[in-house]
Amino acid sequence: MDPAVVESYHRDGFVLMPPGFLPGTVVDRIAAAVPGLLGNDGPERVMERDGVTVRSVYGVHRQGVVFPAVVRHPVLLGAARTLLGGEVYVHQSKVNVKAAFAGDQWDWHQDYVYWLQDDGITRPDMVNVAVFLDDVTEFNGPLTFVPGSHRHGVLAATGRDGMPLGYEDAPGWIATLTADEKFRVHTDVIAELTADAGMVSPKGPAGSVLFFHPNLLHASVRNMSPGRRAMAIFVYNAVGNAPRPVDSPRPAFLAEPDVRPLRPGTADLIGESS
Image 1 (cartoon, helix red, strand yellow):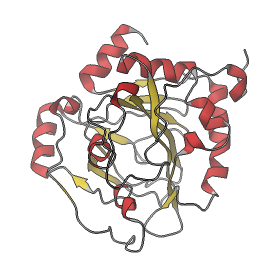
Image 2 (tube, helix red, strand yellow; image 1 turned 180 degrees about the vertical axis):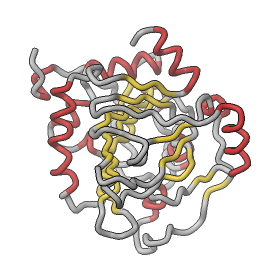
Image 3 (cartoon, rainbow, N blue to C red; image 1 turned 90 degrees about the vertical axis):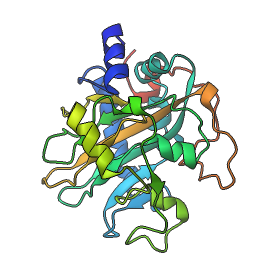
């Protein structure tokens, strides 16, 4: 990564790289693997409140051939190492799918508070890497950020008790993955931060790669368009920031127990020409 890009990331909490940053052949392989993931009826798959539309599939870096190779691609792994300043592993991964007309919102939240409270990760030395698998527009539920909000630390006041509407019979950990955020940020805090820094929604063609800080305050509205909005998201964590033991650890597909540093893969693993 260019030093100016790294500086922009640390200042604003995010940076969007254009198509071509990650080779198009790699993006194509990721996109081709998604339908198979969506069809697997397992605990890794989370549905929308309607019970029929897939919302997310978690732990994708542990499944198949493509995703385990992609997280070790020198472009993504090298960028994560640069932003975090050392060796990394993948703590969590997922494919988020906002289906046409049916993809629900993600309310205002920060990601890190979940990894702090539920997984025992003591510092936000992490980075989200989102690969756009579809064009992201103003109509299909783009992520919305408050620039620079990551510099304010954890903003969530309290955790919501109970299960979200529509998920009453689901396992307890499902409460962290639905449209009704478990750890909410008070609206007064959101209003104050946005009055100072505004809001921005990074948009771009399929193949764009978005890096964002785990304490960056963000949300996304529902998909109102006739087109899908899918992203593959890989959460890299610094090896020196490995989770401490917790009383009730979440499943491995939500909190990776193998914290050994990732080594760069080779191009042929993901069908990329040498």
